[in-house]
Image 1 (tube, rainbow, N blue to C red):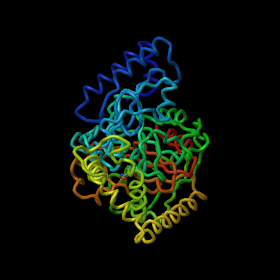
Image 2: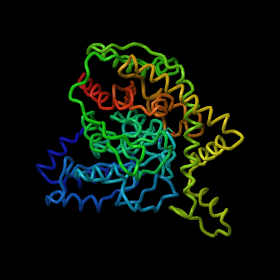
Image 3: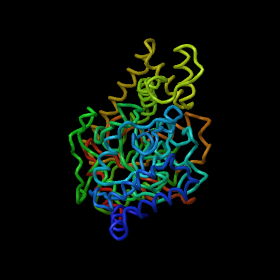
Image 4: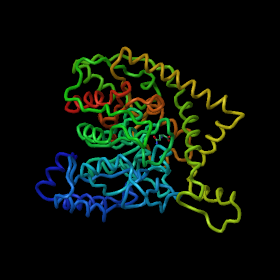
Length: 461
Ligand code: GLN
C-alpha cells in the first residue's frame, strides 16, 4: 500500500508529472471498478508541470488525490452522482480542496457515490455502482464508495469523502482502508453539496493513520464561509495517551452482528489490553433508537437542502414544459434517483404541520437523550470502541430492493453522527472469505487527534 511519504520520495527522484501520469494510468486500467466518475487529467498535468517547474510547492507538492464528486472542484463537472448536476461546472472550489491545493496536492479525478450521498453501498449512483476493491461482486459501501476503492486500489494515497451517517467509515471498513469522520465542525463544508446540515462532515480515506493525520491537519480550521466550523483544534499528537480507559459498546456486539466481525473486534480489544489500556463493556441504551432518530432528522434536512434544485437555479432543467409547477416536478423527477425522492417525501412528511410534533420534534428530543448518554460515558472513558458495520461488504444487489435492510447497515455509524463526535474506522482483519473488517473508535468532541494517535499506536500490533 502506498503512502504519502513514499509518493513524495517518488516525486523527488522522478517528477510530479510522472507520478501524476502513473496515477491517471492506474485509474484508467482499473476503470472496471467504476470508482471514478471523471478524471481531471488536463488540469492535473498542468499543475504537475508547475510543481516540477518550482511554481507550486507545499507539503504535498505533486501528490495525487481524488475527491468525492459532491465536492466542488475544477477540471470536471460536480455531479453528486446525480442527473440533476450532470453538467454542473463548479464556479468555485470547496475550501477543503483549496487548502490541499495550497499545499501542492493534485486532484486527478472525482469519485463515485450514492446520488447526493444518500446511501450505504454506492448503488444509488445515477451512473451505476462502484465495485468493492477486494471482491468485484460485492458493494464498495457508501456513500463514499468510490473514494474508498481508489485508495484501497492504490490509485492515489488519499481521497476525500463526506460522512453524514457513516459514509466515510463504512466504505473504509468494507475496503480495508482508514476512514476519518471528524468532530462536527472540524473541516469547512463550504463548496460541498449539502445533505443533512446538522450531521454533514468532511473527512479523509487513507492507507494508514499517519497520512490521515496529515490531511486532517491541513483541512481543519475555521472558515468564514462556513459558520459551523470550529477554531482549529486539530494537531497531530506524537504519542498516544497511555493506559486509556476504553468502553466496548455492548449494544454493537449483540447476536445479530456477524460472528467474524465480533471476533475481529474482540481480537483488537485483546491487543489494546496487552498495550496497557483498560477495556470494559458499556451500555448505550439509546442507540437502539438512533436509526429511527437519524431516518427522521436526516430526511427532514435533506428535503430542505434539496429544495434548491428546482430547475431554475442549478443544473438540470426539464424541457417541453408548459407551467412552472410542471417545470419543478419534471426536473425533480428526472434529476433525482428513487432514494433521493424517498427521503424528500419522508422529510416533507415529518416536517408537515400535522406530524412535526410526533416525528421531528420527538426525534430531536430523543437525540438529546442520546447526546446525554455519550456525555455521561465520556466522563469515565477516553474512547469507545465497536464495529463499523454489522457485516462485511454485502453482495451487489443484495439490499437494493429493501430500503429498511439497507438502513440497518448504518446502525453503528449513525450514533456518532447524531452527536457530532469524531469516529474513525481502522482495518483490523478480514473474514474467512477475505473481506476486510474495520474497528470503529469514537471519542468525545475534539478528541480527533487523540483517537488517531491511539489508532496509530495499534497499527504495528
Ligand atoms: N448510509 C447513510 C445514509 O444513507 C449515511 C450516508 C452518508 O453518510 N452520507 O444516510
